Length: 346
Image (cartoon, rainbow, N blue to C red; front, side):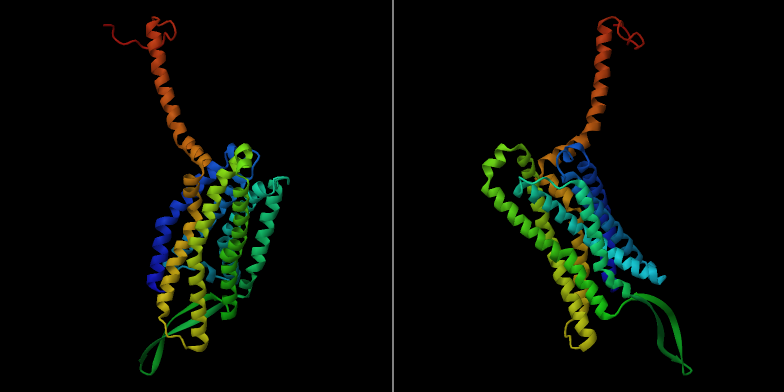
């Protein structure tokens, strides 16, 4: 990455992503409340999504800071090199599958009324299996290795060239790198999107067919509130990730062709810049749940209002209550609370 790309990546990460971590923490706290966990999996699954979003954002901030200050822990040893590549990829892709779980749960609630809801235990097993699948899919990074490069100056002093520095780089073959990037696009964007799109299509079709049933069934009315926010999140998912996926594919395809054939007549620095911008923007999806639920989900909005104003209301009631009891005590001549000091008599 060039200095411009590193600067964009760094300043975008440190200026916006801490807000994303805070918003995910607030969303997590709200969805852990009883209202979202009584006879429904919505609270549990959103909690999983918020946790994975937070991990992804913390991971991105850490990498951006280390890259900006030219500190790369993945270059220290082979285990660190391979593990960090796999860890970054898995937790970049995992939040997309958390959105699949949420959409699938909504699909079961609306389109499969006669079937027993999926238990939290089953979802935990599904989450664990997803984790294993993502680990296996990203195992291409186990082929990465540490390579030592030597930089030599172009200046010659008395027919001798001076060595500037040696540095170690965690890298892989061009094919392995391309496979890793292909897997990343497939598992972060394409496969989750296809599943989500299909489920949303079925949900929308069912909702339009059974409007009267939704009005009379309280459980389904509640699911309809959740449906608005979930479908909105999925639309944002597509809008934000699509430019990243396209630029990601173009970026690596052109770099691959340039490396092997040297026939590219395009400024690769422009592609690098576009890739840096779309990568930063793609992380906005990791803190969209808060805003979308606040706008489209009235139950979430009420709970958020209760969380924010509960403390303020309690303080207000305690303050006004003490004043009221003081006035009652004065009216009764100090019989209720003799210890309350009286003001000067008129």
